[in-house]
Length: 179
Image (cartoon, rainbow, N blue to C red; front, top):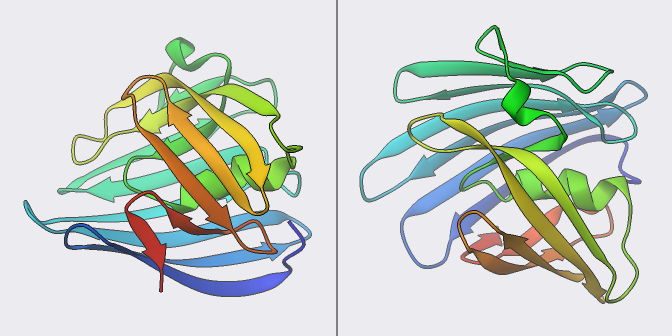
């Protein structure tokens, strides 16, 4: 990611009531995103803070939803903790992915660009809303056609197209569009 400094970004759902807004700050010590997701239907508000180092390696996150909070961290050796407990089931996970958050698809793309048609499959710690359950899932990104990537979550079966800007921030993703 070439961005330095701070950006405010927001996405709205195009097929239902929902909004995400985040402050993304990038500097020599890494990238921090502080955001909120508001989902309509069965109303739910989620707050998050996700931190990556300067190479987009996941450090930690704090997620609040429905009166619950979970803290997630990955140490330099790749060991995961969630809610203060060791999570060996997350071994091999490279990042965190918050359900219903376009922002958390930015780090895997910003970390290393893919060539046209190239594929990157990885394990991530997927945080589900509103339960804040965390489980390891496989996901895949397929390299861009211009600035568009294809994303697939092998656990849920969701497939979507992501569009990114010059800073690799997600602009549009499935039913979300940046406003």
